[in-house]
Length: 169
Image (cartoon, rainbow, N blue to C red):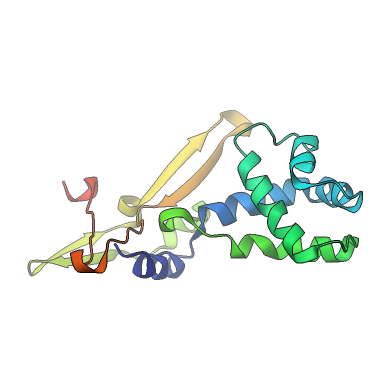
């Protein structure tokens, strides 16, 4: 559906943007190292390489986050300011296509969502509209819960588009 409406749905579900979530995990894990490197005056590319994120799948997010930090902090490299910006920057990252994650421990408490199409009500349970992806095994197993509601905007002359996927088949 339209990204603004999908964003409202995902917010009501307690979701946050995929980039925001990845950013928060990155900051939580590497904040001390990142602050130390930035205090030493190193640039984003060097910092991300030194903490082991570049090259790799988290490299682009690291460089994006540190680019924001550099923009807001500038030449002031005080530890407290860097930490404050790092702690807040994740909330301002855009979410591509409105993709959101919800805390997996909250899925059981999410509401049913009902669509009305052609006068017929179609009710989706959280198990229908949340995709649980797991990785790892044993004590290293981790899950991420993705909202099935993703935004797509078309030119205004085409109108709104809602793609109703597999749960309606």
